[in-house]
Amino acid sequence: MMEISVTFLLTGCLIQDSPPEPTVSLFKDQQKVKEVTGVTEVKEVKEVKEVTEGSSVNLRCSTKIFCSSRPANLTWSSSPEHLLNESVTQQQRQEQTELISDLIFTVTHRHHLATFTCTVTHQLQEQITKQETRTLRVQYAPKNTSAHVSASGFVLEGRSVTLSCSSDANPPVLNYTWYRDTEEPLKPVQSGQNLTISNTDPTHSGRYVCTAQNEHGAQNASVMLDVQFAPKISSSCNKSNVITCVCEAHGNPSPKLEWRRSGNVLINSTNTFIWNETLGSTSSKSILTIHQPLTDTDVLQCFSANTLGTASASQRFHPVTRTSGTETQEGIPNLQEPDKTTHLDSYCLK
Image 1 (cartoon, rainbow, N blue to C red):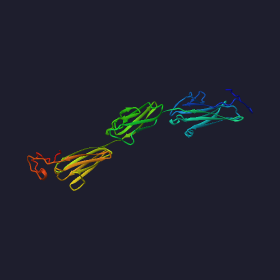
Image 2 (cartoon, rainbow, N blue to C red):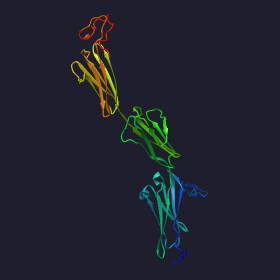
Image 3 (cartoon, one colour):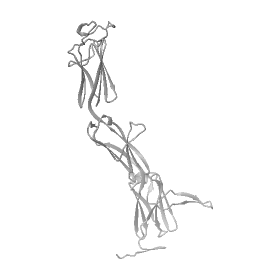
Image 4 (cartoon, rainbow, N blue to C red):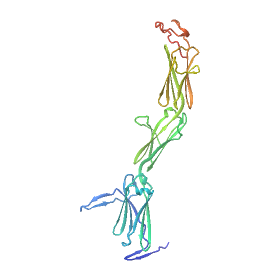
């Protein structure tokens, strides 16, 4: 391609060829040094390609002065646009042969891959505009770290579930580590961006912490794993002059409990007292006290239910044949004769 030479002849100025693009350079960590004469000047380190978050940088645009009587004009623009309005100091000065404009600011991770464009306008025989763009590359510790569960909301017992972790970092995250926050101190569960549990059970419920790390630092994120399951139930009874039964159910969602006598739901009454208690977010407890005898056909049942299923435990009672002692109605021993204690339990579990 043939180069075209253009000569501008102005009063007191002879300009040959079109002005070149401005030069944009990046410096960091400017330091003030004091010479022996006592004059303070700025000493700049070598131009850099990348900077670390938190560094103070100087983005410098310079252009040659062609005609002192018609000075050029330097302006800055950025993408995203708002970066020029965030704690940026602009300084412009003219030296013997150059016009210089500096942008001084502290870089953050939001400056990574941002572009800064310097535009120079020469007022020669005609207005000539040139520009140069510089893309910043910033290294920073993990940001916006987040943890997610593959299942939406909850996972059913026995199903497989995957917990995943993601983070924004430059250079990219070197290590992902998973922890259970139920352990003190925290102990690693597994390394890697994903944590898969193939056969979930209630013990897997809880908060999991993911740590993302690169050479500049680390950041944590957490996620709750909610393993839901149908109720699991246990019950027992003690017999004396009254019958007291305790029933506990463990399930997620938290199960409800009720007592039934031979299929009929029991409620508080003169001879029956029921006391219910919630044990944490996944357990319930109920205590039944009966102040009346039961027949050999009676069945006490503790019944539990949540949205995933039901469970029950039955207690059947029958009179005990005695070899000695005096029995009252329905085979209940006379508990007022402490010397005859061979079979004082009148009701036994089958």
